[in-house]
Length: 301
Image (cartoon, rainbow, N blue to C red; front, side, top):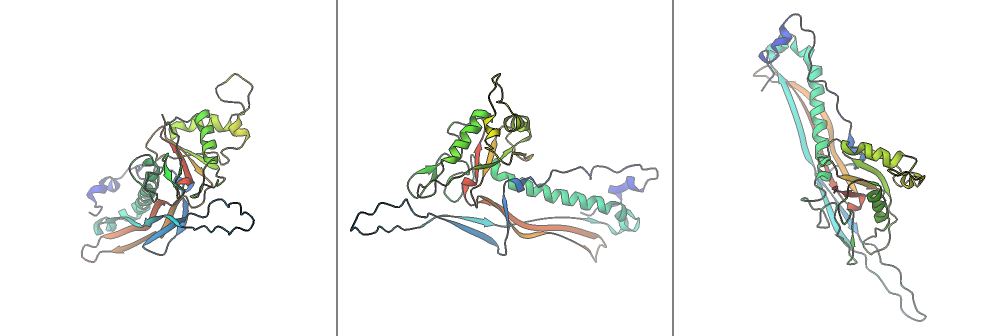
């Protein structure tokens, strides 16, 4: 339905001082703190994890060399979605000069709506990290039992769900250091950044930025800060729905990804039959998970 003069009646009245409701500030692209972005030129992208080799054995004198076989562990598929929205203004509203005064406001509102959808879609992967959606290895994103080709497992969440505090964050750093590849070889993984909802920002500041140990009267140093255990600090994500869930991104490559098939574009045209002017925005992208070891998470206690 087109925006008509009746919907913009106040704009026609003399003495109008302000129009408001379309120019609220918006949060930034917070998913950039979580996902690696890549471009795509296909309708979908598929990535396959390879197992590598197990630890090399000792070769006894005169014995034959043992040969190992690499294999595919699993595949991750990213199917791009088209996100689009538009608005139109009647020919009569344009004749009465309403388009010039309101078009800039409505195009900003349209850009805000497109950006909001992208942030919600990206963060939905973290919001369903502990139940629901499964990925290439057959389990949810944050699980205590990511299966390995060797028969073992990796865990990227605490065995007992824990709130964000000194003990749980130190335990996460230690747990990440023990991750292995598909053949149970250590991979030297480290945390990068803490991702939290707004409710935990003050806890995160005390944990990562205090010089002394948090919550004690002792003269102990803050080991998390002193060791640089979370080198990139923390980022608040306003689209997380669980107020006590927290996540650590890691330096494991090819973790969580965002593929851009078609960047956002805008266009405008006029409808011949009605005379309405139409404006639209459109983009294609996908969010997903290649290697779940790209992140560690806890749903809180």
